[in-house]
Length: 91
Image (cartoon, rainbow, N blue to C red; front, top):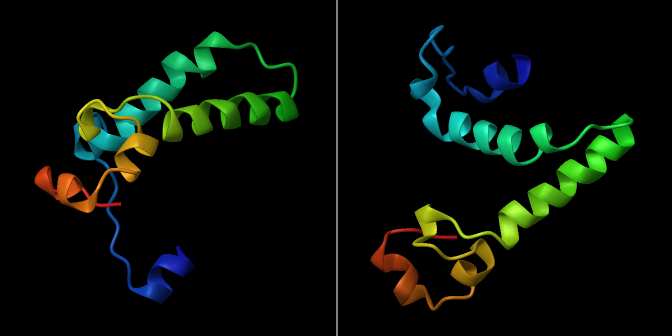
């Protein structure tokens, strides 16, 4: 809270029962839960960190994203700038 106040960043609570107020995060949390957390029984914290990190790397580099027209983030990042601006996405 101190950091947020110091930098003058506004924030708001999400109303109870209204997850659609932060749909992007709710969507990501659902994917993480369904594809990673529900698929593994972690023996300890280090194992959980390793498995979640592997999932994160795959999610952020190798898997296609509908928001990137079915491309992986790596493919999208290597496209020519002109093609990237057609759907108004910038990296």
